[in-house]
Amino acid sequence: MAKILVVDDIQDNISLLCFNLEDDHHEVITAANGYECLDKAAEHCPDLILLDMMMPGISGTETLARLQQDSSLRDIPVIMVSANDADDFIIEALDIGALDYVAKPFIYPVLAARMRTALRLRENQRELQALNKRLSKLASLDPLTEAYNRRHFLELGNTEFAKAQRFHRPLSVIMLDVDKFKAINDTYGHPTGDAALKQLTQLCQNAGRSSEIVGRFGGEEFVLCCPDTDQTGAMALAERLRTSIEESTLDYDGSTLNYTASMGVTSIQEDDKSLNDMLRRADQLLYYSKENGRNRCTTDSDVI
Image (cartoon, rainbow, N blue to C red; front, side):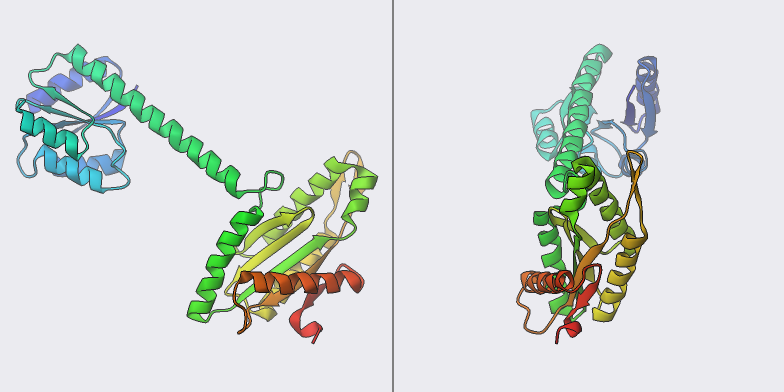
């Protein structure tokens, strides 16, 4: 069953089409002119539009043109239906974006066959859109943790860096690494290590605002890009995250696992040329945390 929008200014034509379409178990929505068509298409998002060519107000071709101009409506297939079968009218409608053209008086089985073709196309479009969405997700997310992968994190982070420079807004980066992660894998096995990384990702995503960008840089190393966050705010976020990691437990295969993380925290500086400058500095600060006892956060002012 499909949702069909029938547009015609003659009620007898609408009634005849509705009878046939409903007999084929389609859901039918009707409109008496082009303006109603545009409103009801936006409201109901039909699977197919049967659009009369000659109507008062705005014509079928003008209505079709307006449908094509709306990004939310242009993918709806449209079959033009009209008593005017002049070549110029047909060519104009097809050039604007109509999928097909049926002349009145039409034979319903022929129209139904053309509708089936249009509906198959619509379904194929939806499947392709869903596939593209899944592929886009696979291309941007780390497959284990579903944090952003390194490439996509850098794309988003560089955009935030450019905004911060242009509008003189604060920006901070937190780089973190699980302490003694190799020991977790060696003692409990790699599945337990994987579970810890998934849990860590969730803790990172829950610690800050939705605007924070969380990425996995590789192995047990993660990074957060924090827009509109100065050094004080970033350090508070890092400490909150460090505490939540330290206090968390991971139950796996009858065992309870605790782990900690070390962090480097930096904010944008006047001589930074790119996000990479901030990342290099955060990495150095992370190394300082590792070398000075682990399970701690180090920021720029701590090593001056």
